[in-house]
Length: 227
Image (cartoon, rainbow, N blue to C red):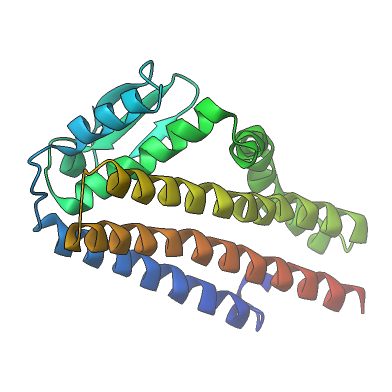
């Protein structure tokens, strides 16, 4: 089956990079979860304070089950912090919470890349579900137009990953700047928060590289079929 042909070697580096990035996040979060902020505030309290100061008082802060499932949901203007973050006073938890506050601030300010990413979500979800059956049918029936329709559907995933990069880096930049300027963290505490957020950022870089490699693989398969 084509899925396991020689082109799989293009996908392996992306998979390994993704695993490395996830391990780096887990390691950094675990390390700095043991370092507690001197101000004694929990991640939820820091998030609430940051949002109020940024004129985002209408954003609700809620807990959500899971490990590092933290996210900001623009549909209902809710910031959700995971079990290990919500009530924690650790530098790692505060850094994660501040990052999600960064997304709420982006929404409040009408940050263009965030708007674009939100608009892409339904299209990307559709494309990611359709690309494989369309591409497979193109292979089975040796019909080149179907192959490239499938590739175009998958390419949306890469576009989404590339748009996500500035959104995530900007949110982390905002978070670190506010944490330092408003005195929530200082000195080595900032180093810890920065290490956690930098590690998290690498997961998005890994996702973009993985999508690019998979797109190259699909193009090679389509070219080989044509030849």
